[in-house]
Length: 248
Image 1 (cartoon, rainbow, N blue to C red):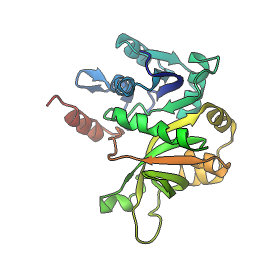
Image 2 (cartoon, helix red, strand yellow):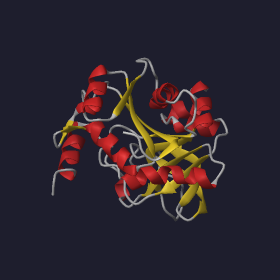
Image 3 (tube, helix red, strand yellow):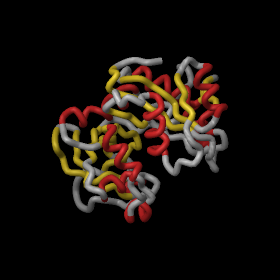
Image 4 (tube, helix red, strand yellow):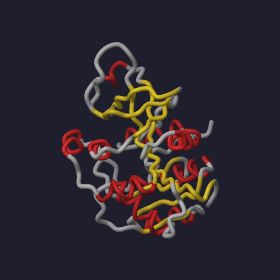
């Protein structure tokens, strides 16, 4: 299903390997595999061609059976970014798409508007890539190392330029803390450069891939949105997603 601009690709990386939730992309939510749910939300965003990038024929078959595009990629990728870039070179070898959105395959409740919002900063700044964040309202999240925080300086209404990402509680002092949402809009040239770089010192220390970009002088802008989409990593998360997405 293709829509939106030919200058934008939406690629959803999906692989079976998940220690906490086996066969996660195919987990049933309301009679539909989770990864298909994500593809449907991405199609509703109507920003460009949507494809699921996977190394699993089973995932590809499920995606194609639902009427969406799947692309087979190598099995040895170290990160979703690597898989996304390979998929982009396969589905768009001429390089027509200048913007590539990486939408995680385990956020079935992602709002189409959030997907659209991710690419907005790239139209108004020289950023190499853009991502999303939400103001943290729960006190427990501020000290939770599983909640990644983005530290940034305001550059406009609802926009930050990222200075750092951390699992620590930061920055210090009065003011909002921001919960990072791992959805990225890349300039194609920046993604090509990024996947050629070696993992960086702080990336390995914090276990946060986006720090590789900052450590190598790339600019990341951040759009502030209203809500955090539930990420599905455990059986408990899956049950919450089923409840949230159950027909009203």
